[in-house]
Amino acid sequence: MPTLLDPLKVKGLILQNRIVMPPMATELATENGEVTDQLVKHYVDRCEKVGLIIVEHSYVSKEGKLSPRQLGIYDDKLIEGLARLAREIKKHGAIAAIQINHAGGKASSKITGLKPIAPSSIIVPGGAEEPSEMTLADIERVQEAFEKAAIRAIKAGFDAVEIHGAHGFLLNQFLSPITNKRLDAYGGTLEKRMRFPLEIVERIRETIGDHLLLYRLGADDMTPGGLTIEESKKFAVKLEKTGVDIIDVSGGLCGSRPEKLTTQGYFVPLAEKIKSVVDIPVIGVGGIKDPQFADKVVREGKVDLVAIGRAMLADPKWALKAVKKLRKIEKH
Image (cartoon, rainbow, N blue to C red; front, side, top):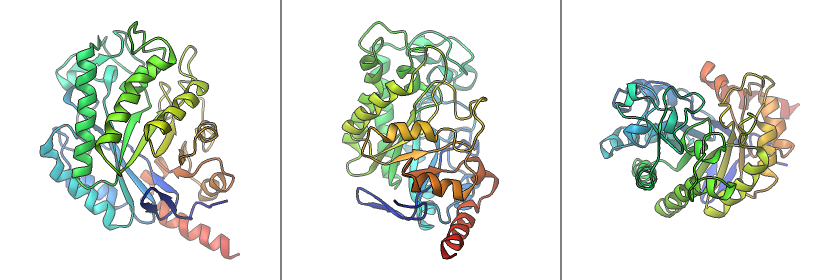
């Protein structure tokens, strides 16, 4: 079995190891979503000995913006700054990905100046106001925004694009029966709830050519009546068929840090279940701090890659120290 320190080849790219820095919002962009020196420094400080860096969620359109200084990818004028960020990450040996997102019903008119849109006109968990139910024209417009954002990511020199379908944001809202009460072709059965995200995947897959495509899957809402892991397994099979190269498993409407889950690697069991039904690499996450624990879940075949979030925020040299520690253990 591979270890955390073994390289991983996905398509034509080779990740130097299985350590992933997951996307975590920093609020270090400008109010227009532009890259700043501070933001570049944040990533450069954490690059060393990381296999894959996934830059934080970037909004694909102004109505999909979540927070005041969120990173943006909604306009061609942002490409230059994003290119600088991608260049600096890659200079340090990491594969550079960027996550693209639309907040949907979690967006706020106080921030965007626009009424939020969502699959249905019900307040979503984490949202503050009732959104407008998306029309078919809205669906087309948002899908196009995702596609254009992916093109900008590739133009900026990123190796990979990650579509955000977790943590209660728009794509997760479509998949979850709690937030999707539509009666048309985009709601009701699992097949219909999957349609919107799968159409986005399909469009981006066609657009970005051979570049890596990741999907962050909110695999379980952990809420009565919500999306279940059994449904997500079926969705994961479809994601693979539609051209996703890596599935990054996290929480659904419950968010990235559900209160009741405190043990290290709390989303790894979900990732393991997704891994059991697909042949593409799967990323596991969830409060992982200990390099030996990260190495163990890879060795045991539970996941292919491990994302280290808060621990890497706290210690920019986490990956470097982890590699040294595991190599030392290997020698003994």
